[in-house]
Image 1 (cartoon, rainbow, N blue to C red):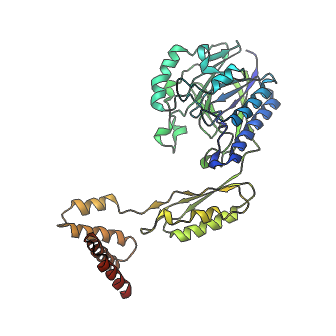
Image 2: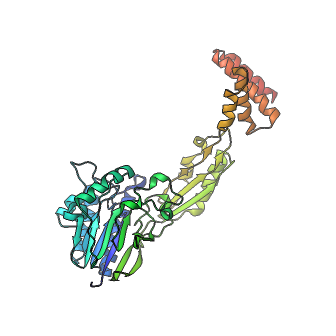
Image 3: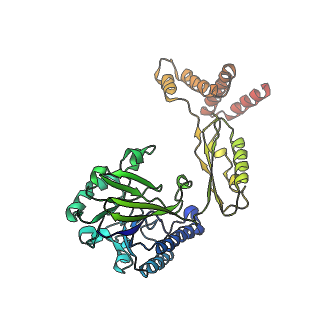
Length: 404
């Protein structure tokens, strides 16, 4: 087997106008141009794109033109491109097919799942690629049939690469992730390969897998705020022998700067949260950055997320490209078991049950005597309003305010 090298890149998401900004689409395009330029400098034998080349199944003409220029540039250097589709650019239906088909027909890339045996085999290396089926149910239902039609045939005398785009249900990968994130059991991935080139995870990973190496190259730009702190780039893999490979992380320099401001706002009133967020944004302000305040915690009982002044927070930066506010605050509720006790227990009538509900609600904010007083008032007001006696309800409220 002769030594060779290749580039492994994934999750380029070309055409993504994140936050409805054309500037962000240009950022993703610029990242791909940098990938191509750095690849040409590295002079590998080929490039692998492990899915999500495009952010949408039907990219715009502007995005297509930019991608075509990149492929023509890399092809002119004698570097072949092998690709599979991902969850974003997979075929939307059987009639339309994936956008990778016409790019394959034009000779700009080699879409592996489309070809006989879903592979490329030059005697020195064997590359096999699967399509993306979008969900775990469809993957585990349809992937075995794909294998039957286009059987994987890794060769013992060659270096074998398996290309796919899915999150595998592996403990190291799934730690801290929701169960639905996994798209397939590792049992659905065949053995016998030397390098498993994955896409879909936006963080780079390298793990021992089936007596070989499983690698996810990560994204080339920030697709969601959770990716913001991850260094963007791709892998350059040098293969000397089947069991002698070297992986180098190639860092991208042009990625947009994100600043994530996580704030625990538990117990704070919406006005206070607004002021704290504004102060944090002003401190973090810098030219061209995207600032993402993430407001977490639990609001006081009488407060609502709607009371936070998102507009003021957004407008508090003077230099940043954008302030994107994420409100992950919980609104305080009475525990379910308390509600169940009130309405399913032995309390004798609806008025008593309603009073107890109000009392529990106001106890989250006031002392017992005051909570009971307000609960009685709320119950009296409710009865008057149900009867349509709005004037009496108004008078009762005025009397209560005068007393206080």
